[in-house]
Length: 209
Image (tube, helix red, strand yellow):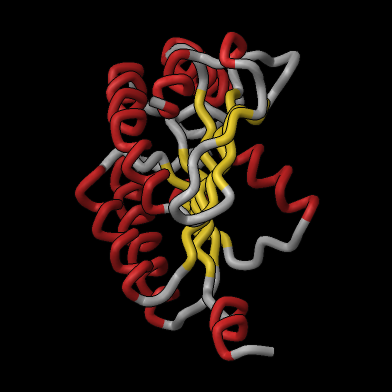
């Protein structure tokens, strides 16, 4: 085996499942985990749920959600320092914080794999978050869902440029969930459509310009 090939194969991987609140990230992580062992998964929502359970609550309150976000971020940076491959699930709406995180991972020799999922309309996300709350999940105010939807879509082209591999999904249609739209298979490669352009939501077609 050549030294170059050995370096590539030993490169740690950061896999990011990202998308607006209510897009179906957690379900997508579960689907991927059925196909392969994802290893360490860092999810602030899961940490928040654990904190709430310890306190005998059904849902994490705002203080626990903040504590969970802080713990998740610290754990992510710890894993980067340890050169440990891992998976994280995030809305990714804070561009400054996540740009710094990706740059740190790249500087530490990580390959970046992006799995992004969204919907064609933020009102779909608002409705799904409401349904999640009724089922016992954590709440996100509708205005914040809409705001994060816009922010993460604005940030998405930059993140795709940083990624070595990317898979872009649409989860608008419950009868055709998690439809793959676009893929990127190499660092400086272009996005390749997996469906006709007519079948893509507008946010996805804009990524190909």
